[in-house]
Image (cartoon, rainbow, N blue to C red; front, side):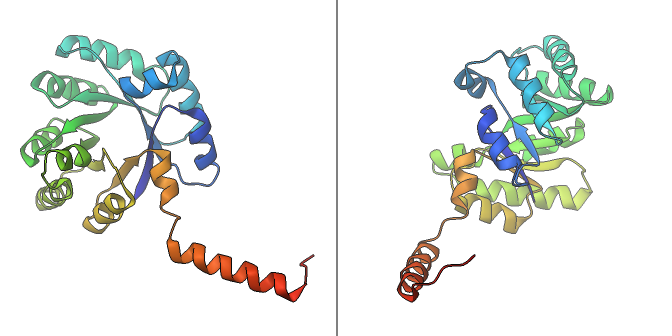
Amino acid sequence: MKFFLDTADVDAIRELNELGMVDGVTTNPSLILKAGRNIEDVTAEICGMVSGPVSAEVVADKADDMIREGKHLARIAKNIAVKVPLTWDGLRACRALSDAGHMVNVTLCFSPAQAILAAKAGATFISPFIGRLDDIHLDGVDLIADIREIYDNYGYETQILAASIRSVNHIVEVAKIGSDVITAPPAVIKAMAKHVLTDKGLEQFTADWAKTGQKIG
């Protein structure tokens, strides 16, 4: 499973990328706002740092404007994936941008029916938002399972990019189902290394080693 970082924080991306933990990056207008930088400048810096896809989102709501914005964003770097919303206009833009040879990430997916449309429109990635479904008392992981089954039934090549990841458990559950990609904040990726028994074991080893009075090297 590929790991994308859901952030526009270049320092956080650099840290995890150096460990080989970053296969791509996703951004959105909210993350660009949080970064406090010009969208083209920060996106170009991220693209130069990461070899995999970097999603940059359009902000228009009409297809023709999305296509224009998408082509502009795609000129930033060869690894840009243009991010469009799952609306009819977004699907029209997806088809046009995909036909023009651009990677497209169709975002804000909340149902299997929407995922089918995105695949047929030529999406490179479909981004189901599992955390936001959990927020309204629906099981977001079930959506990933449904899309995986449908895509496998018909051989759709669109990659499932599980988004709105809130916890390590989310990552493990969608990995078991077969999500192609997850995108998560750096803090959630880092939390995957934590376990109370690891901490407890390390404390015991450290205490016992101190009692030996020895040093290594």
